[in-house]
Length: 78
Image (cartoon, rainbow, N blue to C red; front, side, top):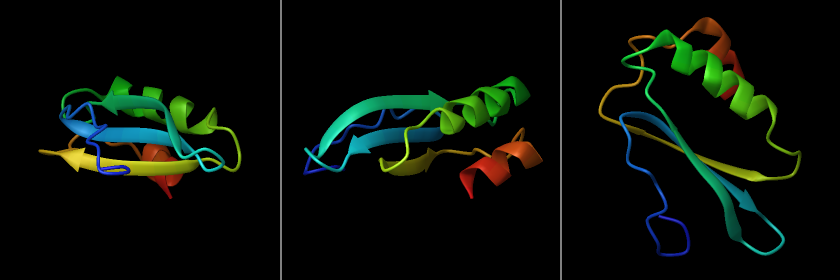
């Protein structure tokens, strides 16, 4: 929930919302099924690396997200 609205894609795995702190608008929402596929971990890392500095990042998990989560994805999430 962001400003009272559910913006999550509600996909299995990691759901990420990027928020602009200046106008409090959700700029982008993505989902990564790191339970099913290790390639999703690679996509997650690349996505996190491209987030502009200064943005608010909201992260949630639906169902299970760790089965194919790589060490690189863990580092990126930290």
